[in-house]
Image (cartoon, rainbow, N blue to C red):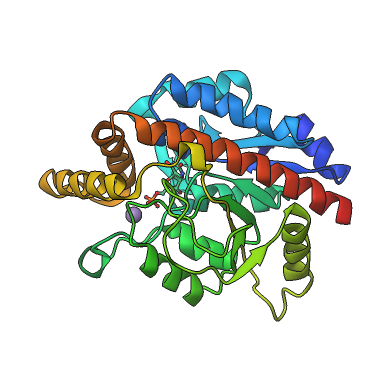
Length: 305
Ligand code: PSU
Ligand code: MN
């Protein structure tokens, strides 16, 4: 049912560290050719930290855990032909033999099915601004409530309603842990002014929390954990400029009537235009940083056994 790359299945059998990576950010979150360079760069970050990368996506209807170079290129260059797949879309994509990029929700589901516990992304989806009218709440949040994967991110994307996103994560029973910070990061900037539920001082502390959450899953959180890493200071955007750019991006989405799964890719592309490409530089820097932390945590988890 799943095609697991040999390097990945061997590492899993031997109890070595594996880090899952998603493909929606490649196909729909970043423009070509930067997206392909990022996909390859993130795998290199994982390897440099001593873990094995497993980028996840669907190729001709087959869920692949550990895409090869040609497949990464196929998803990076496919544009609109590559579907954006949340968990609910997987079975239809298999039946129709489609190529698909997996969101955080779908990547978590496939990673867990393959036995991978750690996953790095940029920023998770969340409660959209105006959700009180649109009901647009990312399936990433409900997936975190039920699927046991440690997701390393820079918080939720700042285009979202961050206080509402934290409330929803609380409702879902998801531990939100700050990595060397007591503040929920705001994706493009390290500061949201919102508190996290717990703090991990280093990779070992995060690994211990995850191990205990799994050991005590019958009475502690049964699903995922969110480990939130602030974006590197040197690449962070200026807070007021970000808010102004978000306001313009949201106004454009509203004017063009963008709805559903198209909203997030539209807003990320609009943010890139509104910041003359700076948002992309920040996004890439935080992806690399999150991926390095995820690999360090995965190595610590494998050492704890
Ligand atoms: N992180 C990034 N860029 C992205 C995403 C995350 O830096 O494009 C993707 C993830 O795949 C996430 C999705 O699951 O955005 C959220 O989409 P939605 O709001 O439709 O659930
Ligand atoms: Mn949505």
